Length: 355
Image (cartoon, rainbow, N blue to C red; front, side, top):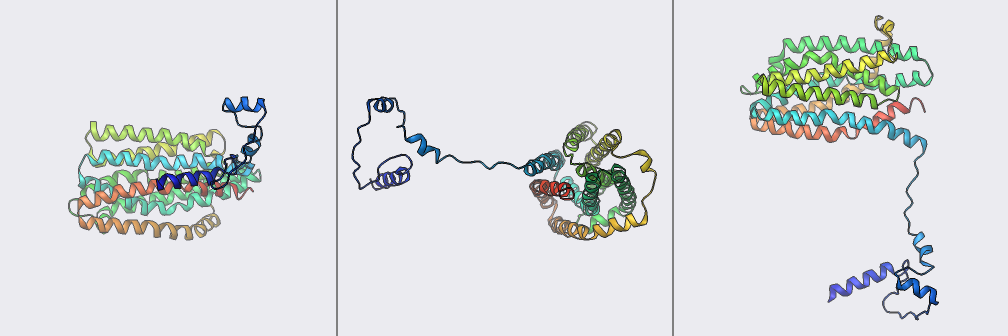
């Protein structure tokens, strides 16, 4: 009874004003409505004054300005593109998990080594995007093409150098990251198969930055869909059909990165955004110095993030294969959630130089 009384009082207080209900404790004189109004009331139609009162309760949705629409146009496909790789990586993790905890732990250590080595160069993308956006905003297509091609030169040289060094010192590197005797062979096999596409991975950063500088994030999304379809197909074929183990998983990821890079480059060449004659000219020393000076702060930031994750992987690796595998699953889920917020930064890099 007490609960019912409280409920009655709450409902009466909530609806007393807007809907014309009388509050408790006061008697409201009964109003006799005209016959037409009583007819409306008999058919559950509110009195004539109710629509005006209900109009005050309508929720007014905010209107989007042209700038808001531009942000959404760039941000939504960018978020979708950034989410593709973590989603496919989760599917790959499920397939690798069928090989055992040691294999999954080895792939986790290999992925951390790759990310710490090559993702630190993501300044190639972040520095390229606003410079191309600025040149595109001025209508200088030649300058935008030169910036893109010179950044590609830097990506290829850095990628080839890092790949060679990492291939030669794979064993000590994975041991440094905490790989045990059981996990280390899987980590070495996966890493050596994957790093063949490292120059393409860095080049893809530049190519995506070129598209973002031209405020086009839809094309990388569709190319990313196709490349990840290639990844899943190659993953299943190499693991389940050809039985290549974790090395096949590394080759599958490399095929995705090579396909993504080739697809973006072909489209940019066909649209004449990147011009062939500019690709034969190596970057000037001033361009290299400018790129590196811009990337120092970004590299330190990225290195601090991934070094923390790598330290956690090293600690998990010292606890055993099962703990390493569990840490890799949690890391993949965290990477997916973190990518969802990067779309706003993509829109900012594309629009701020122009606006």
